[in-house]
Length: 184
Image 1 (cartoon, one colour):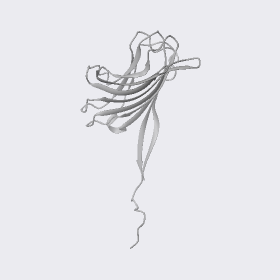
Image 2 (cartoon, one colour):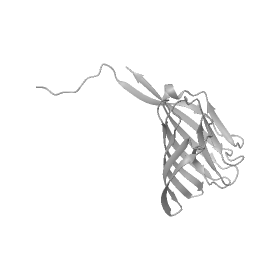
Image 3 (cartoon, helix red, strand yellow):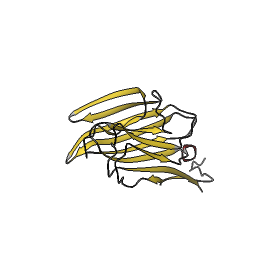
Image 4 (cartoon, helix red, strand yellow):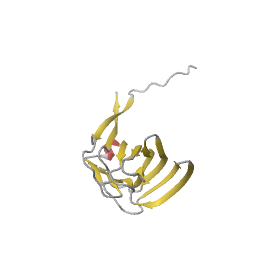
């Protein structure tokens, strides 16, 4: 009996391509929306963020289809702030937080968030961020697993919302990658 490699009639290749690039914001904003998406076709996204704080305090969150319904979002996070580490869970929220959090004027927050976007499933999110960055100080880091519990609606847009007016400062940038699957 011979045991060998199973051959497939085709191979599947996944690559990532830029679906949207905001470029650097030239004026401060309170929100920014990426539209024209089709989560059912694309299935997975990676959102890369650089938030420059345009006004002190507050945070930045992500909403799908600009859904601000309290209770449609939840997350579990592990984080380090200054010299302390902790974990927490939020089960009722109006968006996925921590794209940049508790930033002071001109501080930075960097993040990368992978999103499973296909309808019919709970939309899951894995996020990694570094926040309140100034000089040689990174005040906090977070690893977050999140969910948007709307299984019916196709994701057609993502809104990035600052909790305070002009919270998305000049130099903020948002890049959305989408997964492209091909067979040969």
